[in-house]
Amino acid sequence: MSRRKVATALAVAIVSMAVTFADAGPADYVMAVEKHTTPKGQALAAKYRPQLLEFSDYVYHCLPYLEIRNGLGFKRVPKEQADDRYASVWVRAEQAPDPTFAALPIERQASAMFSRYAVPMLSRLAALPGLDSDPDVYGFSVAVEWVKPGSDPNRPTMEILAMFADKASTKAFLGKKLPSAEYVQRMKLKFFDGDKEVGRIPIEIWDDNFVGTYKIPGYELEKGKVCS
Amino acid sequence: MRFKIATVAALIGVAFLSGACATSEQWAEWRAHTTHFASGDHGMFSLSNNMEGRNPKVTRLDVENSRTQNWWGKTITVEPGQVIQN
Picture 1 (cartoon, each protein chain N blue to C red):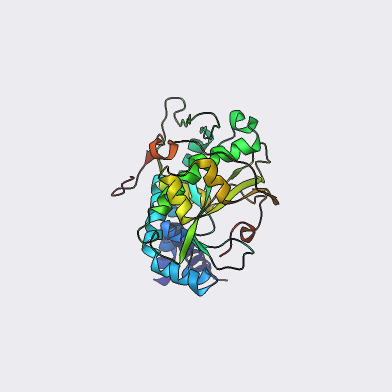
Picture 2 (cartoon, helix red, strand yellow):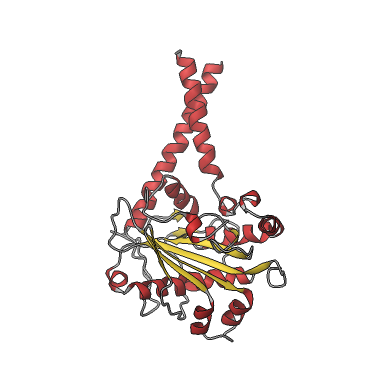
C-alpha cells in the first residue's frame, strides 16, 4: 500500500474518532423515538422531546457525577401487559469506594442512594411541562445504579434500584402530602445485585439536599449554562 | 497535493486525540482523589481534588471523554430490559 493511501486511511479514521468525541452531548442520552416499542411510547417521546433534552442538558452539565444510562424516555414496567408509560431516567452515580457506605446494610445503601439521587430526579421529571395533565403519561420511573462496594475494580458489579410510581402519588409525595413510607409502599420497586434480580427490598426515604447544594471543586461549568 | 492534505488532516486528528488523552489523565487524577459517597446517616459528602497544592480544573467534556474510553470496562449487571422496558 502506498504511503498516500496509508496517510489517507489514517486521516479518515482519526478524524472520524475525533468527530465522535466532539459529538457526544446531552442529546445522546435521550432515547430515540423509534426505540420506544409502542406507538404510545413513540408519540410521547416525540411530543416531549424538547423537555427531555432540557432534562438531559441539566443532568449533563449540572450533575456531572451522574450519567444517564439506557436512554431518557417514556418506558414501561417489564413484563406488564398494559402499555402504561412512565417518564423515566436511569442514572449511574459515580462514587469512590468508602468504608462508611460499604459498612451499611444493603437496604440502607439503597435508601441512601434513593434519597440522594432518585428523589431529585423524580422532582425534576414531575416538573416537566405538560406531563402532569397528559393522560398518556402514567407516572414516573427512576433507576439508580452504583458500583457494589468491594467488587472487582477491573470488572465492577453494579447494583441497581429501580422504581415506578403513578403521577398522583408522586405529586403528593413531592408536595409533602403523602408520607414517604406510604409512597414507598405504593411504588413498584426492584433491586438488582450484579446479574441477579433480588426483587423488592425495604427502603426508607429521608431528606437529602446534596444534589441541590453540592458543587464539585474544580468543575468548570460550560459558558452560558446555568444550574438551577 | 492530496497526500499533503491527508497528512495535515492526520496530524490535526493526532493533536486532537492527544489533547483528549491529556484531559482524561487530568480527569483520572481528579477522580482518584475523590471521596464521593452517600451516607445513610447524614448528608455529608466530600470531594477533594486539591492534592499537593494543585487544583486541576475539569470540564464536562473531560468527563465525557473519560466515559467514552470505557472507564469501568465491562461490568457485571443485568440486561437493561430486566430493569425497564422500552
